[in-house]
Image (cartoon, rainbow, N blue to C red; front, side):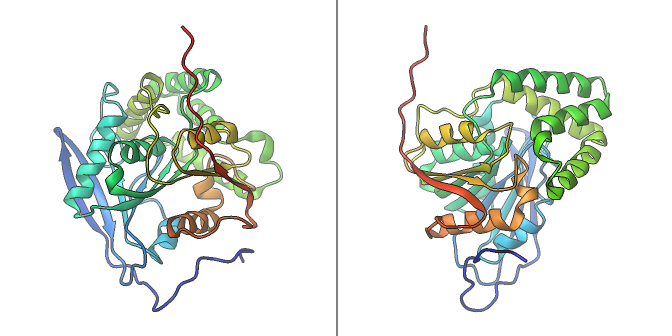
Length: 315
């Protein structure tokens, strides 16, 4: 039982149609998309771009929540899921271009976008480079750059993964993504942690290779260019306990945007998609619909953020 008022569902219920999976080739690399149309869409199509361990088929309940309002396209760009391994010398611009090609080949011109974690960099870059294609964009768990403490931890986890020390890898990776200090009193977080530990300890060889390349891409490339603000409206959200893409780091991304809102969601950390699924879907759908965000019981606060010019780097 949820304690908030959901986005209204006017008219007949919207019924999802069978998913259509398409294969694509971007600069020689195989990638895939999955488009689910709904019988009575009331909003523009939604493009969903997941994090490091997200596949196009595994959005589950949050995809179903969005399908009550809109068509949904999920993607495996090169380096994800069914996509080919993408060497880490390719940066986020390449991934943004690959996703835009998938939009074209699905006949989708204008979309709303939600990006999670790693996928926020691609979503941000599409909004930055192709503003005419993006109505609104929601970034969930993001940052302008990876802080030093996280870099060191990520390098240690990749050493474990390359050596196939999978239990150590899983423990290290989940410790980066989830805040141990807050798990004792919140069963949903402990449940998600157990799920992730099993998932990462059993990564197949192909996905392990993708994870290594994608992590090196994060470490070696600029992911969010804060000097060039995206023009579409942007929602930046994270869990109040997120110790990886902390609320402070997320707010910095909001400050780099032309028109933005920043929200902390109560009772969650970085794994917001799994921990507060229904609440996150409600928040994002409200944002895409242009509805007020204030007063939602699951938010610690909602802030309209003014753009702050980036401070020049010291030489």
